Amino acid sequence: MSGKMMLVDVTKCTACRGCQSACKNWNMLPGNETSFTGNYENPPDLGPSTWTRVAFNEVVEGTTVRWSFAKIQCMHCDDPVCAAVCPYMAISKNAQTGAVTVNRDVCIGCGFCQVFCPYEIPRVNNQNKKVYKCTMCHDRVASGLLPACVQTCPVQALQFGAEDQLFTAAKQRVNFLRRNGYPRAQLYGLWDGKPVGRVIYVLADDPDRYKLLDDPAPKLGSYFVEATLKPLQALAVAGLAAGVFFRAQEDRTPSGDE
Image (cartoon, rainbow, N blue to C red; front, side, top):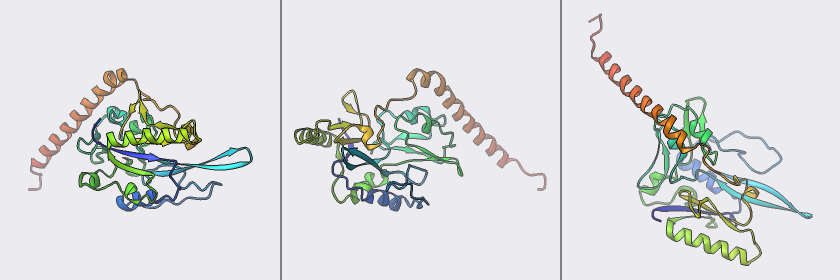
């Protein structure tokens, strides 16, 4: 393994939501008007202007109610389905940082990425027809800085660094938890025992306790992607090229008033 990775250790999270605020601050995202729904979780879901959030889950154990917290965000998959299904190739994986990013100059807001993402992360802004999601602060990372959420976390529930080191640290943390009263402690964000992307979690219990999808899997077969969507990508690129060409010809044509 190589490259950078983010480790989310939910057993250390205090739900201060500093990560949420840091994300909005760095990316200059507006606040969301919300209302109380009987749970302290706020906002209740990701959105075009909410790229990460802390999920709150109340779990009843006998006569005791316990909270379970988890930061929800893009997993920055190494083989991102969202990029594979985008007909305009507006989504790509940054070779330098490993971040999966959206080129909104090309994106048309078709929503394919939102429908087929196994983690249900991208969100379409219905006003400007563009897709938004976590960028892993690739601009900061490319400059040698930590992602804003990691920089802000006061209890080191979020860590960012070399993939080999963090993956080893995560496995050690799980073993520690299992020896100390959490027999169902586990890693989340793996596929065949290896990280599915640039983000992995340390959990003290099963994923559904943290409002994480229990068994995320690609919602689109590779055959369908290759056989159906790849030709659409080619047509989309051809259409864009044709549009640029004809627009250039129109600009060169003298108007009848001259």
